[in-house]
Image (cartoon, rainbow, N blue to C red; front, side, top):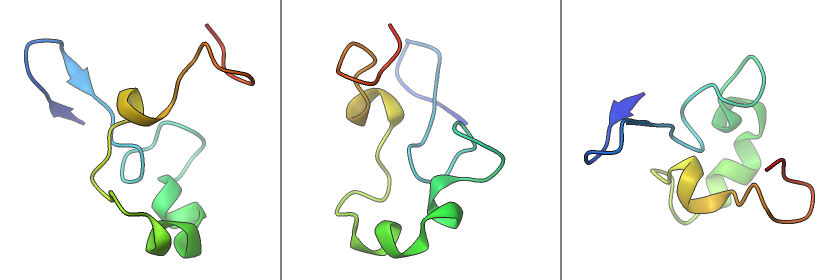
Length: 55
């Protein structure tokens, strides 16, 4: 995980282990290949208040 801005550590959506035992890029290589932003952060993509999220 990297330090991003002054808000503490951020988690890479595709490249960090945040959902399971492997990064999503490893678990879903075909989907990762189609992703436009391979450097995206979880906080930028996943809305915990949206349907299916926890928040």
